[in-house]
Length: 465
Ligand SMILES: [Zn+2]
Image (cartoon, rainbow, N blue to C red):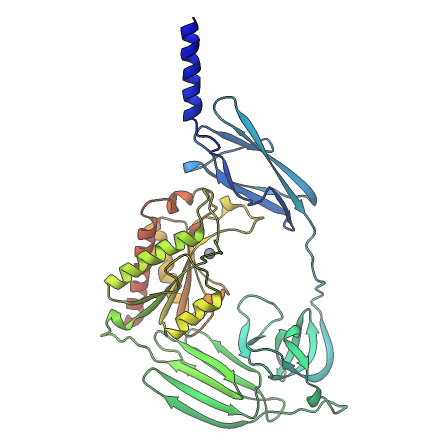
């Protein structure tokens, strides 16, 4: 009897040793005590093989590898979440999360236009964005004004001031980017002080053609492109309603830049470096592994950091492209921090034809990660639409992800027009079903191969047009 008891105790001891201890990991939210303004919050994490978890009594069903995500609504004030872990023995453990929801601090938006007498203002910094609508996002960028550009303001909507361009034609800039121009508002009644075009000429070299428009002063301008052409318009010239407009045809692999500096507007159209008899050596590609260093990017259900997965894919892609003799550069080859500007400048300095930024996706904290799966490729400029389409096709096919297609979005690294740019989101790190995709041993290699194929198809198709 005593012997049996001892055997039983040893058996239990072995079981306890074999049972993975603390296999439950919560990867989101990152803190137990948080204050948020959203109306919901998702929990993501990993459950051990022999464990069950309940959040506020609700049993959570994990996917493969124990990955789970679950989204809860938040009421105003304190929300307590008790995460109870039960292993297959009798042990239970409870982890407490306190999420406090406060009302978001919203600045009063009235959306009404408040008219004012016309006055001259000037920009107080470089690259002030001139927009077609009084909204701080989306596809409404018309041009970038240098510091000390004079603009005529005739009213405000929310935090934007309305810029008079020509009759019934207006644009918008952030009011905080402007200051009243004392010297131009000395008269009691507003008097129009137009600019003039002093000179225009063209500078050509092997790589590009630049139109140089010399003005009497910096003034508002717009540069708007569609699939076939770029239209550049300079406003506030000679009479209140006069403007200068010029159309540029966009040919194969269109890349250009429009910028105003020291009273001169430069419109540079870059020459297409590849013809039908091209060699891959002529194709300059910049690959950008998203995030890095202190910036982890998204965190997956199992704790994976996006920055490492992005880099892994980027390094493999570089190898594949180099094996095909492409001219390839990486914005980062190690786990280091780079600002978005650093990445853009790197690609511009290299004079890249193609720019591909590699990411894995996440969702806002109040969204349900279970409802967001698959891959999606973003572009900003119409010139990059076909590249994004081609990449999204091969990525969803080869990775067998839910095909999110391609979509236009305003991300800083793909906004420049000097290169053809796409931002790839390979899968959702926080979606428990997508975990099986990015935890596959061949994920980085398959992703890199899919991007290579999409890129090669794109170049081939564009040349055949
Ligand atoms: Zn990212």
